[in-house]
Length: 129
Image (cartoon, rainbow, N blue to C red; front, side):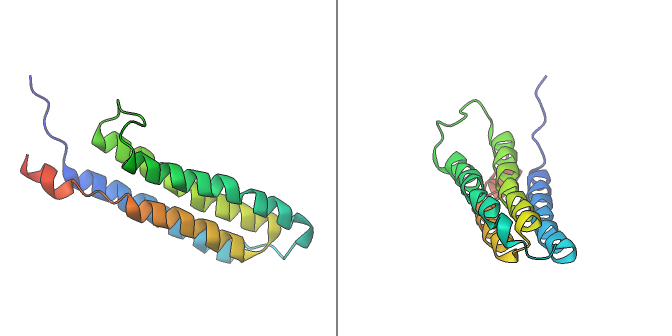
């Protein structure tokens, strides 16, 4: 029995939901930002490395097919979007630690750029199949 083709709109919905969650992280930061804590800025700066690595990993999954070759396109996309989302989460953690919104904005930018670059491009093509 042949498996039915997945609905391409599902990928778009998941992609939009994970992008919206990054925007919610930014909103939470605005609402819950603690007072500035200059003694903890170094911890926020340390989070730059994992934020950049996760955003870079999301982009690399789209550019280098030999990374996780066993994943089919829909699963690969979901992994990319989830990894990109974690960069924005690092930004929220950095804000909560340091009280400096600049770190959240920078790390959220990494995540949002990686998320945008991982847009589901094959949606139109898979609808015809």
